[in-house]
Length: 630
Ligand code: ADP
Image (cartoon, rainbow, N blue to C red):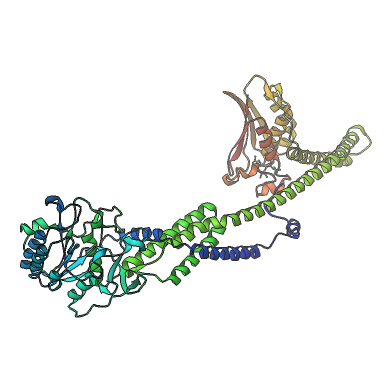
C-alpha cells in the first residue's frame, strides 16, 4: 500500500542520498536570486527609457481630471481662415494686432502678451509703428517671440520702448531635449534672458525683480537657462480661446479681459504645426494650440507648484526594492500567482506614484521599477526550473522506492499465504477425518475437534482473503465468466451460511425473480454474496431477519442483501469499501474481521463493470445492492 507517511527508514535513506536541508536551500535560492535581481537593476539603469517615463507620467496627468483653469488668464487667437493670408508666413496682420490692442486698452487687463514673431523681416516700419502705438495704450505689454532668429536680439526700435521683448517659447522639449517632443517643461530664462512667463509671474506678483521659483533646474550647456516642469491642468480645451474677430467686433461681453493676463497669438485653422504643442493629454500635433500651452506654463509659475522629479538615488532604491521583492515572491509562488503578484505590484506602484504626483507634485520614475517588476518574473524562471527538476527527481526516487517496497510486501504476503494454505487444509482435513471416522473418541474430544475445524475454516478464509488482495495488487484477478442462472448461485451461498444464521437464530429468506442465464464469474460473485451475507449475519443481533432478493431490470441484474442489523453511519458509507477499514462499534470488536471483505466485494463487482450501492441507517439495518450488467 502506498501510504502518505514516509517511514523514518525511507527518510534516512533519502537524506543520505544528499537531499539538501529545505531551509538552507531556500536561503541560498533567496540570496542568489536577490543578487541576480540587484545586478539586473544595475543593467537596466544603463538605459534612460525617457520615452517610457514620459508615457507613464502622461497617463498619470490624464487621470488627474478634476483641476480647473486659472481665473486670471484669458486667451485670444487670430484665426487666419477668416482673414486674408500672408503667404506661408504665420504673421498676424498688423491691423488685426492694432485693433485687438485698441479694444483691450478699453478693458484694462493686468498684462497682455503677444505670442508671435514680431520682427523687421515680417513687418514694415510703418506696420511696426502702428503696432507700437496700439501697445502704448495697454500698461503691461509683452512680446514673446517664438522664432529662434529673434533669440537674444533686441526688439525692433519701434517696439523697444512700449513693450518688453522676450522669448515666448514654452519649452525646448520639442528640440533635442525631450525624446517625444511633449512639452513637459516651462522655460523661466533662456541664456539668462527671462521668458514671457517668468516676467508675467513677476508682474502678477507685483515684484520688481524676477521671483525665484521652486524646483527649477538648469538647461543647456551654459547653464544660464532655467526651467521647471509644467503642472498641467487639463486636456486641450481647458482654456477657452476667444477668436480675435469677436474681440475686434465687440461681440464678447465687456469686462472679460479686465485685470486678466491676456495671451494673444495665432491658432491657425490652416493647422501650421509650429503654432501647436504636444502635451501629456494629446500627441496629436495640431490639437493643443501654443496659447493653451502658454497658459498652463504660466499658471505653474503663478502658483509656483511645479512638478519635481524624484531624486536618482530614490529611483535606484525603489527599483532595487521592487527587484528583490519580485524575484523572491515569484520564486516561491505558483506561476499563476506569480503573474498576479507582479500585476498587483505594478498596480500598487502606479497608484502610489499617481497620488504622489497629484498630492505632492512629485514625479516618480516608474519606467525602471515597471521593467524590473516585469522582467524580474522571467529572471526567476531558470531558477524555478532547476528547483522543479530537483523536486521531481526527489519524488521519482521516493516513488521508485515505494514501488519496490510495495512489491516486496506483496511477494511476502503471497508467499506466507501460500505456505499457510496447505498446512491449514491439512489440519482441517485431519480433524474432520478424526471426528467422522473414529468411534473410539468421546463427546468431549469431538467438541474440541469441531472447534479446531471451525477455527481452521476461519483461518482458511482469512488466508483466502489476503491471497485475493495480493492477487489484485500484483497481477489482478482474471475474470472467468460462464453463462449461469444467478439465482442458483444465490441459493448455494444462502445454503452454505444457514448454519451461521442458525447460531444467532436469524431467519434467512430469499425472494428471487426467475431469470435467464447470463454471463458472470460464479466463483467471484459467490465470494461477493458470501461476504455480504456473512456481514449481514455478523452485524445483526439475534432473532433478526435477512432477505436476499434478485430482480432483472433493463440491462441490469440487481441483487440485494437486506438485514435488520446495527446499520452503518452515513459518514462511513464510503469508507467501509476501502482497504482494512472497520467501523468502530461493539459488533466489530466482538467479531473478528480484516476490513477487506467489502473492498473485495467492490473490486469483484467492478471487475464485472457493475456497481455496489448501500442504504443504511444506524439501528435500522443495511441494504447492500449489487448491480451487474447483463
Ligand atoms: P470486516 O467485516 O472484516 O470487518 P468488511 O470490509 O466486510 O470487513 O466490512 C467493513 C466494516 O463495515 C465492518 O467492520 C463493519 O463495521 C461494517 N459493516 C459491513 N457490513 C455491515 C452490515 N451489514 N451491517 C453493519 N455494519 C457492516
